[in-house]
Structure formats: C-alpha cells, structure tokens
Image (cartoon, helix red, strand yellow):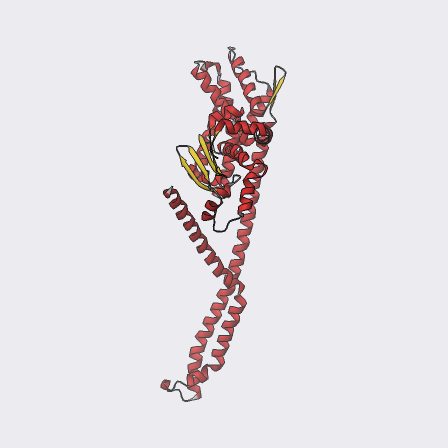
Amino acid sequence: MKRLRKFFSNWQFWQKAQLDSRDKVSEDKAFIERNIMRISLLILFIGTFLTFFMPFVMASFHFYNLSAPNEVGDAFGGVANPISSLIGVFLTFLAFYVQYRANERQTNELEKQKRLAEFRAIQESILNLKNDIQLMRYTKSKVTYSHSEAIWHFVMDHIIENANTETTQFDMPKQQYFQIAYMLTLFEPLINEIDESNLTELEKQHSLQNLEGLFEASFAFILRLEDKIVKEDKEKLINGYVKRKIIIPVKKIRMVLKEIASKYTASEKETLFSAVTKIKGGAFIKQVRYLNHRGTVTFFKNYDDYLKSSPSPILTQEEYVDYFTKDDQLTKILVTEPVRLLMKLEFLDEITFNLPFNGKSYYLTLEREATEEYIGMDLAELKIDKIMWRDRFLGKFVYDNQTRAKFIENFARVTGN
C-alpha cells in the first residue's frame, strides 16, 4: 500500500512538474506575442531618447576630454550607430519571431486537424468492418445465426463435412466464402495503416485495441477449431485449400496485430489504472492493486475518508450518500463495472471490488471463465457488440432487480451491519 501511494505520489509529482514546465514556457511565449507592440514601442522610445539626449549625456563626462562640438558629434555617432543598428536588428528579430510563432501555430493546428481526420477515418473503417461482420448470416436447421455464431456454424459444417471427402475441392458457398475472404483481406492493411499513420501513440493504442477485440471475437475460434481437430488426431480433415485461404491468413493477421500492438501498448498495470478511472464511481476509488493478472479495486470507507484524499471534493456528504443510495446505484456498480473491466481488459483473469458503505462492506470477486459461464456470453464478443451489452447483459443482469440481486448473492460477500 505504501509503495502504491509512493508510486502515485511520484507519478503525480512528475506529471505536475512536466505540466508546470510546459505551462511556464507557453506563458513566456504568449507574453511576448501579446505584448510585442508594447515591447517594440519601449525599445523605440529608448532608442529615441538615446539618439536625442546622448550628446548632452556624453558631454557631461569631462574625463573623456570632449570639449569641441565636432568631438562630441563624432563620439555620439560612434556610439549611437551601433546602438541603433542593434535595436533595428532586435526589432527585426521580434517581427520574424512573431511570424514564426504564427506559422508554427498554424502548422500545428493543421497537423492536429489532419491527425483528427485520420483518426476518424480509421475509426470509421473499423466500424465498417465490424458492421460487415455483424451482417454475417447463416441458416442451419431453420435457425438463422448472426455475427460470430454464423461464422462458427458455417466453418464447422463446411470444413469438416467437405473435408471428409477425398476431393481437393472445397465446396464452400460462394456468398459466405467471399464475405469471410473479404473481411480477412481488410484486417492487415488496416493494421498497417494505423501503424504508419500520424496519430499519437495513445490514439494508435486505442485503435489497435479496438481492432484486436474485433478480430479475436470474430475469428479466433477458427484457430480453436484447428487446435481441436489436431488434438483429436484429425488434422487431415482440414484440407490444403481451407488452410491456405482461411487458417493461414488468420494466423498471419494475429501475428502482425500482436507485433504492432506491442509497440504502443502500455503496461497492464497502467492500463488497469486508466480503465478504473473511467468506471462509474471512479472518483470514489481509494486504491487499485494489480498482481499476476488479478486486480483489486478498493473504494473509500466513508465520506471522511474521501475528504482526506480529496481536498477539493466534488460532492457534499449528502450528495455522496445520495450517489450510492439513489436508484440502487451501489449494487448496479458492483454488477456492471467488474464485468466491464473483464470485458475491456483481456489480460485480467480476476477482478475484486471492495466497496464499504453505510456500515457494510461489499466484497465481490469475478473470475473470467466463471463470469462467462454465469452470464452465458463471451466477454470478447460482448466487447464489440454494444447491442448485446445493452440488451443481453445490462437489460438482464443490471436493470432487472431480481436478477441483479441474485448476481450479488452469487458472487459477493457482505459484512457489517
């Protein structure tokens, strides 16, 4: 705990120092740009003063032995000319500097707009690919399957059934085959486009994570199918055509995606910390721990505990209590947010929430496989299908009071009064 606090303290201090340093430099540059006219007029006034009053000033220095007007004039000219030239050079430099700053600001703005447009284009490409996958349909025994279920049943039926024949031809229906082949050909160029784009590392990481989730939820089962057949000593059931056209491209895409994503992926601990700050009730989290693919999220004990770590609280004590009691928000957080973290963070095998409130302490621990078995849904697929998340998970396990209470009863332990 002390180490975690020290980590947060050092990290926050470093961030603040970096921001303060950048802010100070920006403030200095902004001060010069805002006051360029005043600075120029001040320099011009000083130069004018030196030009007209330098003879009187220099004549007052008797130790220079300047008595004749010509001598004073020559001396003044010898001193004033370099000063005037220096002032002119400085003013010219200021003019060029202001122009440079304006050009730099304009260039940065254009680059920002270009990067934003590029980011939006990539996100739109990922969304279009996702929509293409979701439009997949396959009918079997008068039941129509969609999304990854359609691909699963389609591949299971056609790979195994047709591979039992001795023919080298793979009798795959053209419509489904072209749909799968089309999507496979889109993944790799999209991965390279993200890698070679002008996006920031954070934007690249976000885009690659979305693409990785889409890929794993949609095509990873093909590799699981191959593993299953190999374990059952039925490798020859997959003929060369299927391997060459589907399985090998899938393996190649997975390898390329993993290699490129690894360049932009933050550490698992940092990713967990970042994700936790975005969940409901994230402002009231006191501590986050991560070890061996297991995370623990601990909330403040009470409002006084919250005040100690929040010098500028966003809520009053009444609002704090109301936040957790209104509309059963506490139990909704306990059901929704641990599942959300498991869904978003594939490296998490287990997540624990410790939420003390009103004299009670709620301890809830979810394991990935047990959670998927209980809700009857694949978390990877849940991640990319918002309709499934909204209707089949939130609608059933969160907004239904009885089902939510049963979920809490099954996974949570409550202590205290």
